[in-house]
Length: 123
Length: 192
Image 1 (tube, helix red, strand yellow):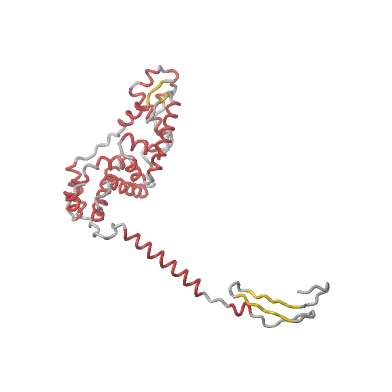
Image 2: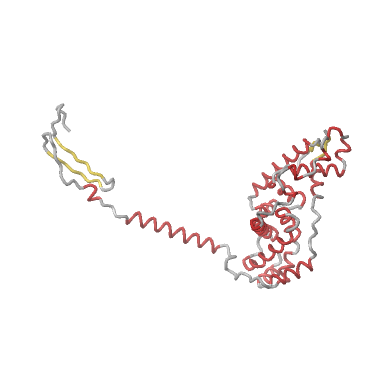
C-alpha cells in the first residue's frame, strides 16, 4: 500500500476547484445594477430587523398563555351539583350523619356514626 | 467593515454595496457551486446578491459580510434546488459512488507500482474517487474547507447547520475519505 500524507491530500483538494469561471467584477456589477433597480430595498426596521419577529413571537406567546389562564380560572365548576347530597337512606341503625363537601377535590364525604353492621363493628 | 460604505449601501448606493461585497464574491460562488453545481452557480450568486441588496438596510455591519452572504447563499441554493427538484444533480454531487468517480483507472491497484499509483494525476483520480464515495454533506464540508478555504462559521452558514455539526462532518468526512483512499491502495497519514 502506498503512503501519502494528509497534507498531500489537502494540497490536492486545494487544486480541486472546478473550472467554472467567475464573471469579472465589471460584468457582474453591470448585471447586478440592472436587476437591483427592479428590487426595492426593505425599509430600515422592517422585516430585516431581527427584533420584529421576536416581538411578534412574544406577543403571540403571551396571548396564548393569557387565554389558557383565563379559561382555567373562570371555567365554570358546578361543585354544588357534583357534591350536594339530595337524599340518603341508611338501612342499618345509626345515630347520626355528617356530610362534608370538599369543593377543592370536588367530592363529598358521608360519615355515619354509630352504624350497626352485621359484625357489630361501628364506623 | 468601513462604516461609511455600509451606511451608503444601506441608503441605496449600489456602487458602495458592490465595493463592500465584491471581495466575498469568490466565496459565495464557491458555496453556490458546491450546493447547486457549476451550471447554475452564477445564477445563485446573482440571486444571493439581490437578496442581500434587498436586506441591506437591516445589515448592521457588525457581523462578517462573508458569513452573512454565505447564509443568504444557502437559502437561495435551497430555494433553487426546491424549484428544480426534478432536475438531476450534477455528476460530481451524486452520492452513488459508481457514478461519482471514474474507478476504472484504479481498478486493480495491487498491480501498479506504488510510485506510479501516487504520482500526480493518479493520486488526483484516487481523491476524486474517494470523494465520490462520501455522502454529499461530508463532501461539501470537505470541499468548502479544503478546496475553497471557508472558515467553520462560513461553512455553517453556507450549509445551514451549527459549527459543531460542521466540525463533526469534517472529522467524519476526513476519516471516511482516508478509509476510501485505503481501499484504493493509498494510505493517507498525518493530522490536519
